[in-house]
Structures are given as C-alpha cells and as structure tokens.
Image (cartoon, rainbow, N blue to C red; front, side, top):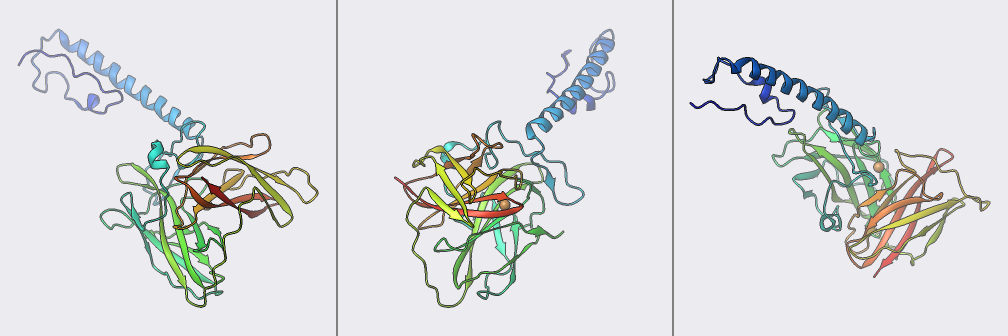
Length: 333
Ligand SMILES: [Cu+2]
C-alpha cells in the first residue's frame, strides 16, 4: 500500500482519535513519519476537543437559555436553536412552508396526534388526554421546551369562540393530560403545538389538530366584524400592522389600562405576549413569531397569513399576575 497522508480531518470527528496507532494498522509508512503522525493526531484530538467546547459554548449562547430538552432522565441535552431576531417556531423553514397553515391534520411531518378522549359533556370538568406518536407508532416522550413549555395546547370551538390556551403535563409513558371544560356544546378543535426530539437528535416543530365533541344543541356565533381595537376586563388592546397574503409582516399590540395609561406588561412564558391566529373556514393554525422584547412599548409579532380570508387573532398578555386574552377579527385581502 502506498504511503498516504492521514485522512483529511473532519472537524471534531471522533474518528480521528479512534484510528489505530501507527504501526498497528495497515499503515506502511516510513518509521520516521511516526512521531510526526502521532503529533498530528494529538493536535487533531486537542483541536477537536477545543472545537467541541467552542461549539457547545456557541450553541448555548445562541440558544439563549430559551429551550432545553425534556423527557426521561436519560434524555440527551438537546438544543433548540433559533436564528437571531426570529422567535420560536422558526426552524429554518422556507417561506413557502411557513406560509402553510398548521393544525389541519392529526398526522403530519412524521408525527401523529392520538387522543385518548375526544367526547366531552358540555359544562362539565374533564380531562384532555393524548399521545404523540412517531412514524413507527411509538409514543414520543422527548420534546424541546419552547416558550417555557414542552407542549402548548389550544382549544377553540369551530365558530372560533371559547378560546383556551393550555399546558398539559406528560406522564412517563408519554401520555399528556390537562383539565379541560368545554363550556358549550358543539364541535371543538384541539391543537397540539410542539417540537419533537427524535433519537438521532433531529427536531421537528409541528402543530397537529383533532376535533373534540360536546354533544348538544349547537348555536354557532357569527364571527365578530374586523376591528383594530378591543377591550378585555377594562383593558384596551389595539394593534398596528396589515397582514398580507403569503407574506410575513409585523403586527404590534399596545395594551392600555382602564385609566388610559400605558400598561406595565409582564413576561408570561418567556415573552411579553403570545399570539395565535386561526383561519376562519378551516381553522388553520398560523405561525406567529414573537420579538423577545417590547418595541416602543408594544408587543411585536411576525405574522404569516398563507392567503386571503378572515382570521381570528388571540393575544395572551399578562398584567397584575393575571393572563388575559384579547381577540380580533382580521380580514386579509
Ligand atoms: Cu402555550
């Protein structure tokens, strides 16, 4: 065999350190080359270690402490990295993918939402229980924490009333559960918004949806007319911005108190506000990317509306230790 240079080093590769020592393997290079190679290997190993430390440090900083893995004690530490200036739920997706509404399917992106209970009695406290399964129908137990929670559940009736934003807890077997009361009869939609962690460390952010039913007389309410301000418990909430079909645009909300004074907003789940947008007609769930800090006293989001139509916006904000939801109808054309 002809003498050959060591393989081009893959940065941080374990393989460099695992190669047999000179002379043990099939190498047939001149003896004089051995010290050089050993030195080179040592340099590569040390370099790889330094690089690994630097990478870990860099990832940790990029991650900004906003996400961590949850799951069993054997969970590998997983990073949930967001590009600077972009909020959660952005995963390098191209604009086309981001412009698609989520939550329309029980199975998508390799994961399936499997409810363990879908029928409720209107007005009676019960429990929503479900599992997330992977492509091999195995129950998923590892999720990335996004906005302080590994799982976000939205429940709304099909006429877009009765909005609830819930955070279930997971049992060791991967069964999620959360108390849920469907106050009125009708067909309701439940969304599971999560980032699953595969065994190989791959992260998949998706939103799956399933219908829940509360039998009884269903009297759907008409969607309220579009408006840029609304009130909730004496607080006035208004927004600025013009959602455009197929584009990601800024939408900023200002909250003022009962006396008209601008309000001291509190962080809730790692952000000043949480916005969910649902499409009238099919209840498509939209991607909304929050800015981490207030901008001119306003809560700023990046909203992607996939097409023309009417949408209902639900803004959760916290003040005085209480979370309230302001709702808006928006026409996109
Ligand atoms: Cu949530």
